[in-house]
Image 1 (cartoon, rainbow, N blue to C red):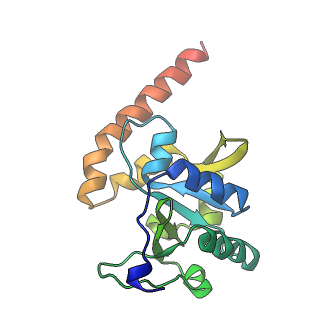
Image 2 (image 1 turned 90 degrees about the vertical axis):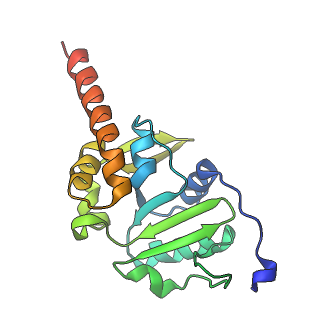
Length: 174
């Protein structure tokens, strides 16, 4: 695929998430979208996931990525398609898809992968599918250690959202 064949990209993170689920890819939503679905009033323009790194799951992921015309996000105009080997690493694979940006992560902060994050995830219903989402409490905990300016800017908003949710939940138990 050459840069002349590069299609304009749309931004439909809901459709991206729906299609990931329909492809039976095992993943946990992390990052901004994980905070948004738990009530944080922030904006995000990509979907960050940590995927289960098994042969079967990576094969489903590659098939899904082909179906959404995914290619590596780069500063130049070169179109490079992801390779199965990219998804066995602990690194990040930053992709552009026909539905918007998708960041497929081997691990996040503290070198935490899918199996490590699963116990700290919550399940949400999304268009008839159960989706694992990293808990807001863990997101806040990890962002407190960050030196990234975007994370530090969002941290007070995430902390206040967590505080409000905790307050509401403790009020509901009374």
